[in-house]
Length: 198
Image (cartoon, rainbow, N blue to C red; front, side, top):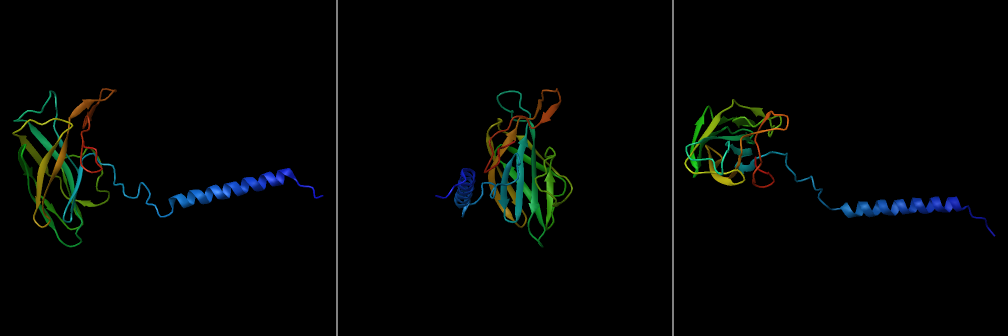
């Protein structure tokens, strides 16, 4: 009769179990796309593409103290536009909306592999290390009442990339933090695609 060392048998069984579990887990993910593979950077506004122009973190900043932001109020349209073309410069020609008149100030040129920042996106770096052009402003004089939590159609027209219409969320403006300092952006409304609205 052969003597069997029980501790060696137990160790062998544990090692075999660990190997089977490892293979099973590996097999579960084989051929699968990881959850984070298709996720985009966290931004607070709408994310859209118009030809070679990538629009990021598009939202309206409109302080809201009642049920609606009333007509006659000026709201700031905030966004970043990156030109993904390697050799064709572009230009933001106009922005229109049914909720008001959009006035652009500053140079709307977007060079190849460059970017245009419109307004102050609260320090959010939606474009990474892309070379940026001078800041421009887009003011919306409201002709219709708007409310945080809703989205509104805006049409962006570029000289070469063309035009596209998509929904844009609004921000409630500044709200107080617990420490008493204001927070620009306030409550976040719904956005488009993966974005949650700002």
